[in-house]
Image (cartoon, rainbow, N blue to C red; front, side, top):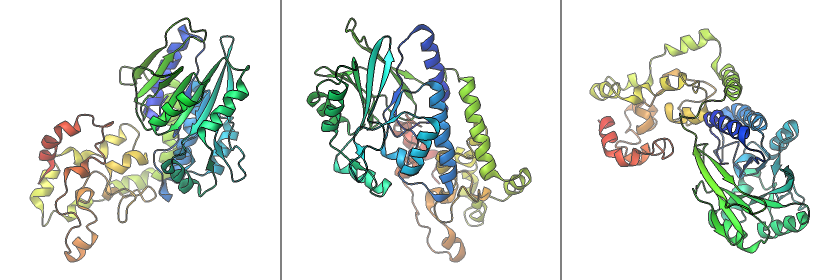
Length: 401
């Protein structure tokens, strides 16, 4: 599986796996980490909704039938204590072979064993020990966790499961080229499922006797590799695109709808309050007296309707969506989850030109007088808008004024 879960992909992931189970036995479902969050820091106003989302993801994955999830640094953004609380509450199979506390004691299960068609599969989790990876972990956890040498940790697990396991899987969370190092130096690992680098490969890479697979990020693809534990057939890997042609699983969709209702209740207030706030004039109207032609042109663009597109998808309380569909989300004088300022919905002038508070009050220069295309790429990312880079001149021309 992949990293950085998007809720919509869970509908389709469940559908494909349930269909697969009808004709196949011996399915093992894993994730290489960063399952619960996508950001290293979360504004205070989104913490509670982030906790709701984390709990939802664990509930969904338990329903799907998850066997093991490696711990990535972003899974710890809400705190180690909170993650351990979730693990206990849901009996969730987090694994980490080389994340340890100050006393060098493992914080999570080092590995799990699963019976598959009369064979035993061992699944371990490895976190990278490069300075970048260790530094991120230290910053996020406040130094509560340390990283042991993943090679030595993996060798210890392989030795420990020798004679117990017929097949060994390592879930890795590290720079991709380090997967090759582990594959070549640790004998006895049959399959590495890589994460963190957000790469994907259609065909399994081969390093000695070890296969290496990756499935990208954000629930765009589901990686499915079929292997024969007795070596009677060649491994076959498939990246299943979780697009519109895959039906939504009704049970998972219902769980996510309930989550959306909880978040709406948390931030939305009463129906009367929402109706009143929706009548507030947009901030852009303050620009109209001096920039009437620019405001008129803006009203013809999709930017002027950006927030409305979220309501039909029950996304109007999703921080990940609001960061691009509102004005300067969680920045000073910008839209925030707690206040839900309807004057700051859509992609307005200040989304591109910066905070105009001083400009409007005393005509000080606007922070960004001439925004460039690089600003657009913060929201129009490759996974959301795969053709944006190629068409950026045309698109930029439609909004430039």
